[in-house]
Image 1 (tube, helix red, strand yellow):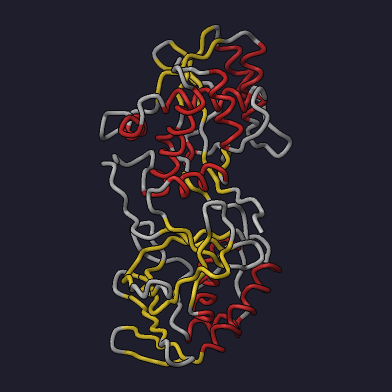
Image 2 (tube, rainbow, N blue to C red):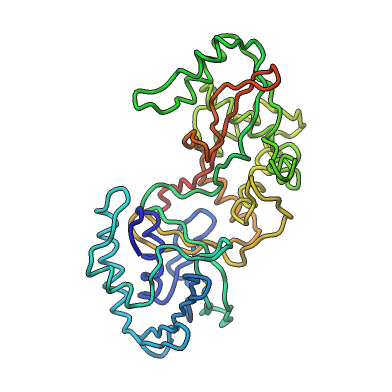
Length: 376
């Protein structure tokens, strides 16, 4: 372990807290904790590297946790993980930017087997739990969970990338106006996306949505291909949403408010707009959780079999089952917002006017973050 931000340290903290309590409470569809609904953790497994898998066996008959790495085995009292979790939570709350843990704490955490800030798993699962439901007596083995920490910035549900940018052809643009638009910067030299967009409109420029960037090697619009598996009208949802937010016609970035706005505009001219747009964005949010991205062709299959674990700002740990249910989709819908990331190369260099083959274009991009409301 070296340095990390608050959200990244939250993954290690979450593991320590689970091992300290040896159980995890389940949240309902609204994100509330059920004090009488928990799962007993019998084993926690983490892939720290391709050749390093750590396992923690939690005996229900003792107050001990046994670490196994390859042929190495060591047993710790539960109090060890409780102390480390409490200490780490304080250091995370007091940390700023990217920071290292105190030397003693770092050493003690490493001794428990945790040596990487983030899991090395290629899927969305950060940990795998073997859990016992005390009500039914059913044991489920190696259930994958991703960890979403609110100790720092709100975690992302859908990450932006070069392929997620919406491409617009501009009508009424000139080389001189292009230079003027691209010279608009904030005082810190960042690109003010909203101001550039509104300046285009103020000059009477028309923006025609053309789709998404064509992948250099695949020679197709990967994001559009993925969206069409869910609903071919989803590009219209995002086009309308981004226009509404940047023109300030949509009052809030939270997904329910944005969806109400899109329903009022009704770009697809459907007969039941509220039901249709809410259903399609819920399907997208769930798919994004299950593995859909803008840069890799998706086959519609989920790469999760459990759910995600939320680390709240106060350090509380709750589990959410990611079963394809109405309640889970409703939770994602109620607790997500559309965000505008930085405009650098990794995000598609968007909000710049550019010229290709005698025509002018402009790109917009977005990401979706969890924005969990205080439900307690």
